[in-house]
Image (cartoon, rainbow, N blue to C red; front, side):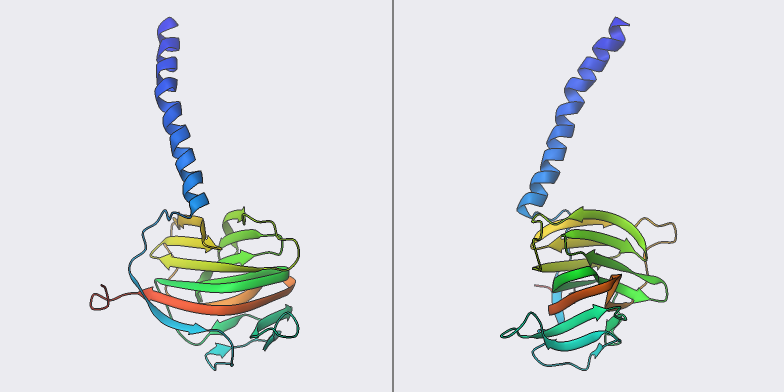
Length: 220
């Protein structure tokens, strides 16, 4: 009995500090924006500030290209009611990073990657700062952005998929970094799209940009 108690004390003395240090590192890393996954070198594929409408966008019902937020605001894509999904051209991506600014007033605005017949990965933002990561309709992870939103506000979402690794940053800080371990493997390449995760919804999309992994010739 005494030996077991002594062993437990020794193990606790050795293990607990390690766990505390590890937990502290994770929290500190997220706080200062350190990335838990090393991305490959990237090159720009395309971008849209929506100053003018580009034909790449296949706008579904419930979307408009217009100034958002009142007089003096620049044009953007605005979704309202029960908007249909809107797709970025016919482009198909495997590994890709998309960054966009979202202003969600009602419901949930979602950015989809690898969107196709097999489904999609998506990050959804709600007006209270709730951020969810999805594979199809299954929630892989959920957290809240650091600042609780009081009224409408813009948030910058950066969403990357590399093989089965999913990485999401919100306002420059890593929110999620995890692997899709589904038995049937990661989703195949697909498109980029926006949709309403919860309807009715009102949200605005602006300052959209896409990066893809650099080829050997493009790497520094």
